Length: 136
Image (tube, rainbow, N blue to C red; front, top):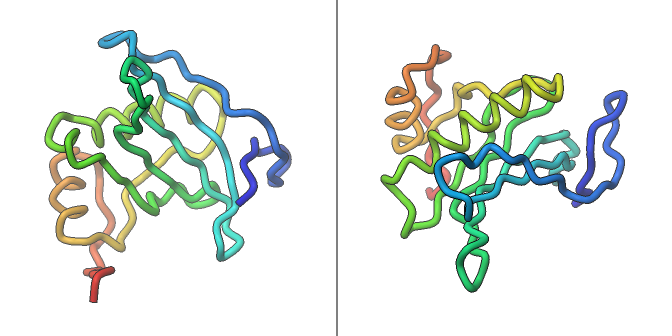
């Protein structure tokens, strides 16, 4: 996995910048980076980390396709679920995309049942769903 920043459609290795959008809690930081997944697709990733904890625990992360904007995955730590982490990640990712001139995230048509519930709750415009079950 190559961590990097996008430049001319290519990924170049760089250190992760911290995005300072954490007005509600000074111990929360967001990091964003680009990388290439196992299928060779360029993705953007945003992570939400509680730097005030002893372990600097990751509260959640979201990956979205750098070319299409489709959200590929979103994960929330079990202890942080139902606390608005996924919504915060989506909002921060959209703000970072606007700030850095990159493709903003949008919901994919490939959504699990849980992903579909979350997508509907965001009130974003949704593409027609293709039911996905990654566990069978």
